[in-house]
Image (cartoon, rainbow, N blue to C red):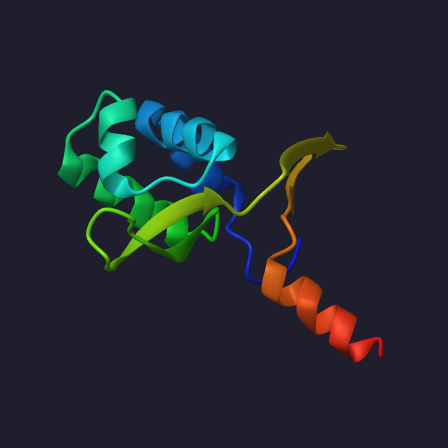
Length: 115
């Protein structure tokens, strides 16, 4: 776990929330806008935006800009920024390990640095 990862209490609090879990499940299938998430989750628009903000603050979802095919503008879509969360209990100590998805920009940087 890096120093920037959220603590176990933050992650547990987030995962306790049904809407947060729905957001993570839905966006794991494909990146979605907040409007699309509102249609897929049983929550209001403001609730979706609040949960997305909490997930972004914990770096558990990433925000991406995509072209909007309907309006010709851009829209924000969200995708999980994690592959796995492991909570470990070892000799009276709870710890958390978050395995993150490698971002395309990080992969590109690694490729360029390897040349």
